[in-house]
Length: 208
Image (cartoon, rainbow, N blue to C red; front, side):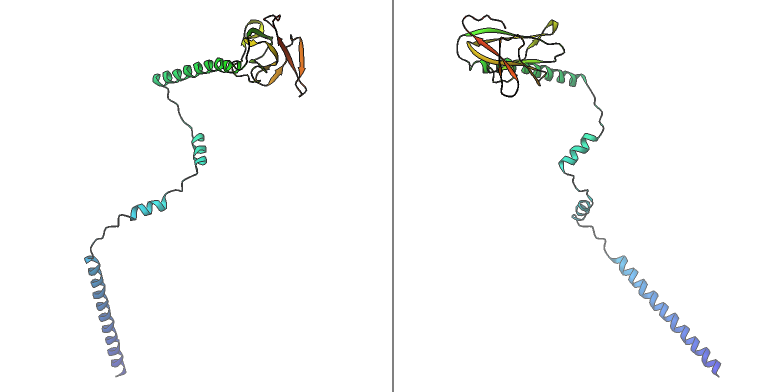
């Protein structure tokens, strides 16, 4: 009798379990069916830009971008048109450079009043790359007073100066000041160096 009751209990338990499984399957099918019936929604238009802006790399400062640009290897392609354009720019720049110096020379010397005397400044100096004459007549500025190199390392320039007293020296390679070795008089400049002294009068010769 006890065995029959146990069998009945197991049978009822099994039926209850199967019933619960069937109910669960019905619920899952209902959920799946409901999900399938949901409409497809499009993403808002602002979604993609917001995602991309979040992923976009932070912009580097200008000096860092310039440094990266300078370090990046590049190939240069030359064409006949580019070569011609560069040549024209070089010629124009050279022309402006050479026309600027005489103009500056005239602007400096125009400030000097009086009847002018042509004076030839000359310096013999081997191994010099550039020589300019500077003095009280041009405010000690070499621009426009560059001397021309000739044979035997002779550098010369001719200026028209009014009568008076001037101090001058030669600027060699843009850094070394040398007084005229052929000058008759010298004057201390107050910094441990000497300047040549030029005195132009009615009885002076025209060359130094």
